[in-house]
Length: 421
Length: 133
Image 1: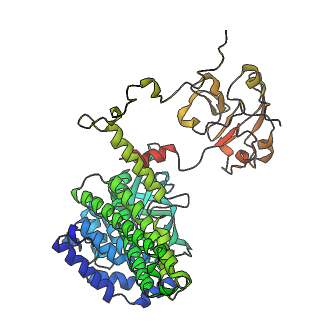
Image 2: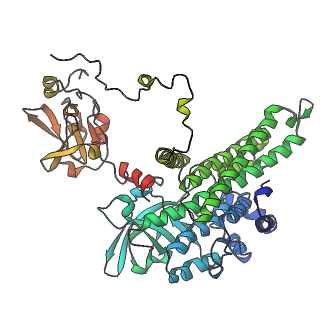
Image 3: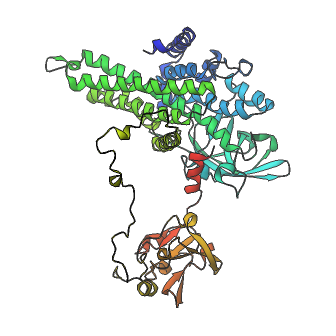
């Protein structure tokens, strides 16, 4: 599908991951997770680590493959066909790893990143709190310095691996008077430092990932638990949001693609009014629109990946990709269910599970509304600060261009009020 | 309380903000002019914006119609009845430090004269999200 944009190495990697997804994952694991019979897919992580597929972007000495973002997107899209839970389990080492690899000390990389990519340690990410997730900088959790330690108090909600993870990358307020983006710090917190699970969530989809609310009550951690600079959480957050949102985007494409392919095959065989239902435009146009949107989503994801590979600021591209690709993924599953009709609403086909999964894609890792907020902010900044001297001024390409009196942008509210004498 | 009835000050001084909702951004766009009962007294940029007492619990005095519903509703007795020459009968958030952010005062106020400061999120945290790099 995107053959024309991929090099030989990238195609080879995609085929390798496709083979892993096809051959190494027992359907029983997916079913057990969705049936709430699994705490965490440890065996999946072990298998992916054995195949050296975790954290592909990271240096080989920490267990990665030194590959680029495009390669990782290809891999996540392939894993995404397994559903959002395993997509999440596969992406977490990349998301948490980004924070550790970019900001961690050598010791932290050896103690956390290496065993994570080897499948020996599971990491969880504590970002969302009961009071909110998208409004990240309002974080209420605190870490107060006491001699050589920090005392952490607070709680994090919807933590994948809240049950099951060995350690957590969390954010806490360490400065109480500075601007919000200069007030937070990131920490690596072992579960056995005193992290308590207070709620295990019953989820609509994305099951089997130990989603929980975890609580920190006067947890004392050594200074060395700080990840990156003190009050430097903003930098860690911005770095981690690249893999967080790009993996969400790529995973949703994989999930949407297999759903609409299943529906297309169904529509080719299923008959109504004496012909296969794909002969009705009401059905076939759904397939056309969904696949077009998924291809457009790939365009955005791979463009963002290319920019990320350069190391440049890519928040606009990442947020565009996240919002568009997860909307496209959900649309594809939604229309796939419509094409299958009633049987798509049963567990005879996996569309209902993928539907429950896909619904989360537009909410998590920064809701799509927040992505659009970010995108508009970046776009307005780009447009309003752009040097337009080399561009044609199209405002002049109209007969009324000289009517400056008609180009009204604001008026005094009290312009026509009666004047007091 | 008929909605045309503003407080005495508003009627007397033809303040355009009489019976308009409190400006919820007053903590960032208004300025503190003085203090009263340990809370700040805010003035808007324009004379007609009026006056807000309080920080955690802001009361726009020109919008207050002295119905005293907030006094009855508040579980921690944040508000007191206050008679002044300038505003007449109004409420003052004299014990705003006791506020538990239940927001019941906002709910019962018939003129939206009260705004309670939210915890952990604000225009500032939005700015950090959008411009914090």
